[in-house]
Image 1 (cartoon, rainbow, N blue to C red):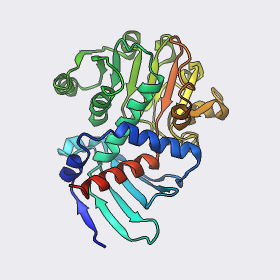
Image 2 (cartoon, one colour):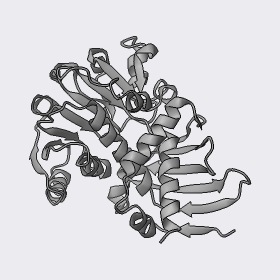
Image 3 (cartoon, rainbow, N blue to C red):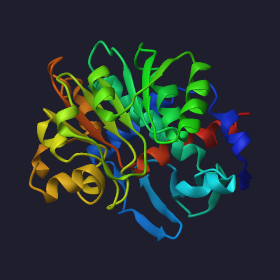
Length: 318
């Protein structure tokens, strides 16, 4: 048996043209069916400079492999000329524990599988007609969310909200090359009044959108709040929502948007619906075009398992 370390460039080439949406959907379904073993997230939090490291791992029953993923996010890295995210995925044989491969993806696969999950949420939860997409944030995830949303919505009109004018201009320039029409929002109220699909992609520790900003028929996907400290939404938005979807109930009660809303008794654990159950049911999502829906994504190991398996299989066919 051979083992090999694969570079980010090789990994990017290996997923070119692959339907990752279908792949990640299957992972969510297996998770919600109880067909996976996913222990609690391992976590290291840093304050000076701010950053976090997540260790996510597990396996899907009946699969040949188990995966351990380490991914970091240090938002001030751009001041050093470095990417804000980094990481590695390691695959082992589930029958022997033998190392099969190391994917030195530098955080790329974590970013991609997060963006794919956002696109899946748009597929099942966004209004039938998305009039305009609102993006809060201007970083890596803000870019990838739009790139993958193209696969599940037809809307190309976008409004972006950020704090740094240079980063906003760079973002607009990059995403125009992807075929989007972009304009800048002055504040969250303007963005929410103009957009009925909103995606938050920041590492904020305070709410960026208020309950009073939200109009009927809006879907919000929050992807930034993946630690117990982070949040991007006014917790009352979850109470306002007709449906709150989470990638993992067990994770979301301990971190992010759902954690805060539960602690304030705005929602109950029984109100939460897992994304895998929405995918399976086909009709457990948006019931009306006037519904307000929220998806809280904290990132689940099954996403890492599925994308790692896909990359490994493709690398061994090249």
